[in-house]
Length: 268
Image (cartoon, rainbow, N blue to C red; front, side, top):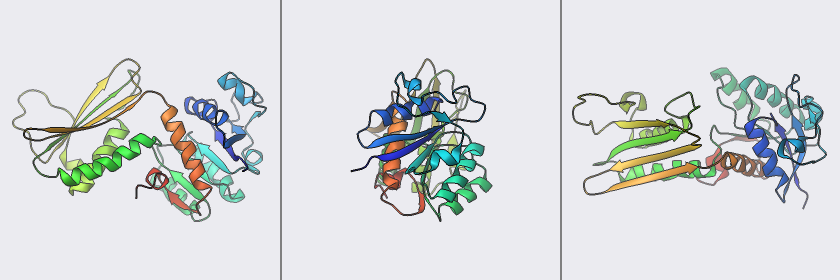
């Protein structure tokens, strides 16, 4: 069986390097091309050098040349870069896995239009475990909809600039939707002083920042006489890369359309 020919956009970034490692260690994937922006100091170098090896693929900024003959592009870059790559993917009929975040409403509409022509997996969190956790939270929320207080505790490294994390907010959205609540109305992001008794309809957040924690998330369902905790802990970025590579494989067997990791994992 022929290997799946993968192109990596932003190959010298943190996720790009992790994706390169995953591809070079895979039995069914091969690195077809490695992309960087036109001002990158990495252009012309062997992409394998980014992971301490030699693979024979030179880093390029020519998107159209890179995508010729490719089976899939994996893109964890910036919205403007992804949109440029997307246009070339549509032109050449190459499916794309998008882990980029921060798109405007107009750009998301363009993604939807492109999905009429090519397969797209678009998910802000590619972790297999996180996406399975989303499904588990949906199931738990249905069963524990009454008599259980819901709190989300998340921890990340000292350099993270936003809080709560996007994943924690995503978990809360799943729970709120399942319970028929509006997260904007029921979220509690901090407590201090005399707060009074807890409103049972709220979803609370607690944030920890320190050290080099990649990402820990726990959702606590606290009832009378028992509590249920659903936890996901990421120990490296490899979990996101492995999910993206799994999404790339998924697109080889599926028609044009917009997919997310729930589709990839068969959780819908």
